[in-house]
Length: 179
Image 1: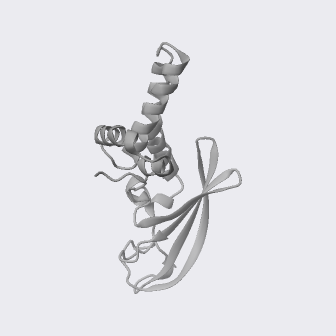
Image 2 (image 1 turned 30 degrees about the vertical axis):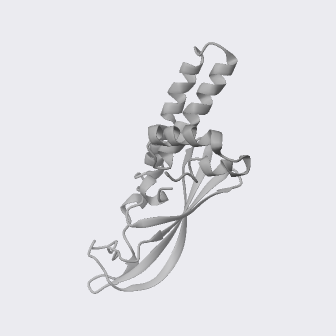
């Protein structure tokens, strides 16, 4: 499975630790990369001294009808010229709206499913529509897990007749490994 930070590269200098539902909202926890030196919010110079950390919670635009809260661990840094201040984070500016880019990424991931949904209307019968939906789901799941859909389906369909019923979950895209 791919690293979540390659799928969600929006928070420059920060790494996604967890994404979890929190009531009706979506909680995303971010921590700064340890190897990255923060820049000072006053003069924009790079600082090597971190004095303390503080957590900041930001309400952002909703995604798929769910409110989004970002929990960001920020560093208080020292500058020789300007003193102590919070690190500069460009995507935290008021009008940057990182979640808009996240929402667009989510929409791009589900767009093939939405296009397929209109195609399933013309599949002929209810059974064939359900089969087409299942195949589209497998193809999209394979893509999201970083597999070539053709190689994945070819391998799964050849292994399926000989696979034990108790081991069938090994063929799911998030557990599958080519033989």
